Image 1: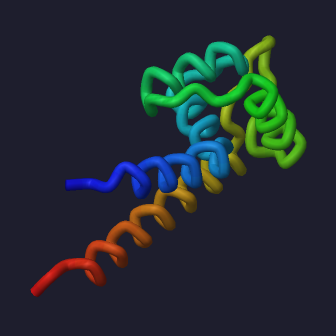
Image 2 (image 1 turned 90 degrees about the horizontal axis):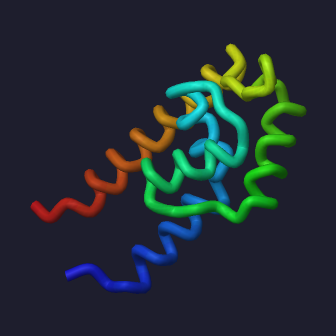
Amino acid sequence: MLSNTVPRRLLKGITVGSLWMYVLAVLARRPSYPYEARKMIREEFGFEPPIVTLYTTFYRLEREGLIKKVEGHYMVSEKGWEVLTDAIRLLRDLANKFEKLATKD
């Protein structure tokens, strides 16, 4: 049985702290704007980021060149695709390491 504390702690750490990954992931599916991306994050990942935090994240991602605005909608840039791919790889590697270390023989 899972402890309620662990999932909540984990979810908080990997949602709000890593909102940029969620934004890139939903924009990878289709160009969007922040309000619509918020709904997509809720539908796909089951949490709704604070709107001010989301707009701040969009601003930072655009400033860093990871997303770009085209005809009023934001989309993932080439650099953003590379960063998202690297993030996915890192998460997969970490999950594999945790699983390997935590598996009982």
